[in-house]
Length: 389
Image (cartoon, one colour):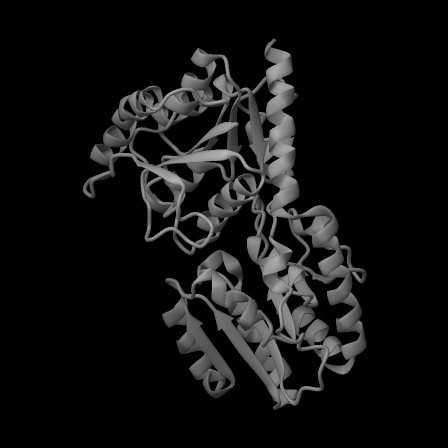
C-alpha cells in the first residue's frame, strides 16, 4: 500500500517539536510500522527527520514567502497547482491523507479524480483561528476552499466532537465525519525511568508541558501554585516548553516570590519529554473557560501515558477522556482555588495519585495509541472505498 500524506500548512514544521508536528510524525510512523509506504508532501519541513522517519520520501512543496497577508494568501492558493502536479508526477497512490490547511484543496481533488480514498484530518476551525489570531484578508476565498475540500473528501477525521459540530456548518450530512482524538505511543514512556510515585520524594513537583500561550491557563496555574507553595515549601513548579507568555509568567512568578521554586526548561525535543515527565509528581492542564474549546490536547495523553495523576479543567474533550476520580481529577475551568485544593489533596494522598496514574496509563494503552489510530484510519479509508464502489 502506498499513501500520500499532505501537510500544506506553512505553520506546521512537520519534523518540528510542536504538538501538531508530533501528530503528523506519529501517524506516519505507525503506518510505516505496518509495512506501508508513506510519502510526505509538505510546505515546511522544520529540521532533520526524527528517528524512524529518516528513509521516508519527502516532497518539498513551495514555501510561502513572508510579507503582507494578502500576498501570502494568494501564494498559498497558487500552490495548489504545484501540489497537483507533484502528486501526478509521482505515480499511483492507494490513499491520500491530508491535514486540512487553510488554502489547500488539490490533494482531495486529486484523490477524487483518481478514484482513490481521500481522508481529510481537521484539527481546528482554521478560518476562525486565522481571523482572530493572525489576520485574514480574503475570508470569502477561505470559506470557498473549505466548502470545496470538505465536500470532496471521501471521509473527514475530526479530532473532537466540537470540531465535528463545526464541520456540520459546511456539510448537510455527517456520515463522512469520524471523530478520532489524539493519541500517544505509550512505549516512549515505558522505560527505565522510575515513576515519581514509586519512590519516596522530598519534593512535590507540579508540572506543565506545552507552548506558553494565553489559552493554556498558565496564570491560573501560577495562582494555584502560589497557594500551595505558601503552605508547603517543598513544592516545586516545572514548566516544560516556551512561547510568547514566558515573559509575563516570569514577571508574575517574580512578583509572587516563586521564581526560586520554579524551573523553566525552555523548548525541548520530544525525546526529552519522558525524562521530564518522570520528574513530576502531578501534571496539570489548567485551561480557562472557553466557549469554543475544540482541542484534543496532546499533552494530556502524554501525561496519562507516563502514569502521572492528571489534574485538568472540566472542558471540551477532557470531560470525556478523564473520568473524574477514576483516571484523573477535573476542576472547573479557570478556578485557581479549586486547582490549588486538588493539588493539596494529592500532596496529602500519594496513594490516590498512584491509583489515578495507573488507571490513566491503562486508558491510553486500551484506547488511545497511535498504532490503533493508524489502523482505524485505514478502516475508514476502506469504508470510503466500499461506498465509492
